[in-house]
Image (cartoon, rainbow, N blue to C red; front, side, top):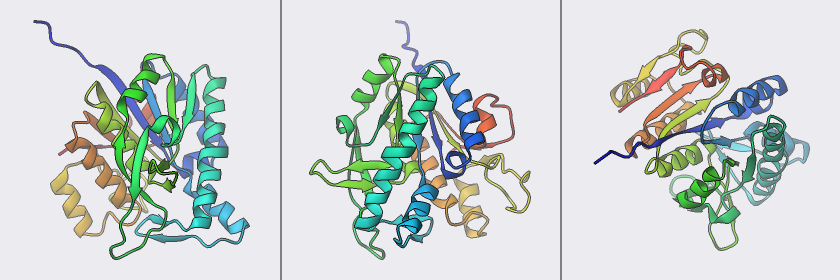
Length: 263
């Protein structure tokens, strides 16, 4: 009996430093639109939300790289992520003949979340992903539509949540791994995870769980990179085929220096 061969699927996540730089964003969208086969884009936008909050006189508070989301901050997050940023990216992809569809988790009930429980920190209106509706995403992909997800989810009871975009990318990649050979690509402004933050070429080219633990204990990896790497390993443990952290050049040339994750 012939073994079923899974289609390849790219799940790419871009963050604020790409989104905030018009030249970098244009270049990324150009390269992403040329990727053949099914693909999904997930974006953050925390820097834009922080800037708008400051303009509106709303305080932004971060703990261990994660945003505390008050009711006022949630309004700003939804306006920024689901509005201006998401539609700018979708329009940019349409311009490049990539038929994109902008989504929050509430649209088509595609990502269900629950409020993060209060333990040592009350994160406010921050949601942890409960379920990703892979069948809906697959239906979009089968129609050659590229979903573009922002970092907003919902609880099915009318409440929206701010949810970490790295986590959304990991959860989507994990869910889709049942039907696709999934590569998860975290794209940011550096070449990969750095041994020395002052040396932009000091890329750690391979990190497994043992290496990750050692780097964390040595405080080489801190703050915002910690949750990103945890999401990488979560995805690998849920059958995602490949996980990479790299700059935007990786999407058109995967031989460029970057960080590959493995268990």
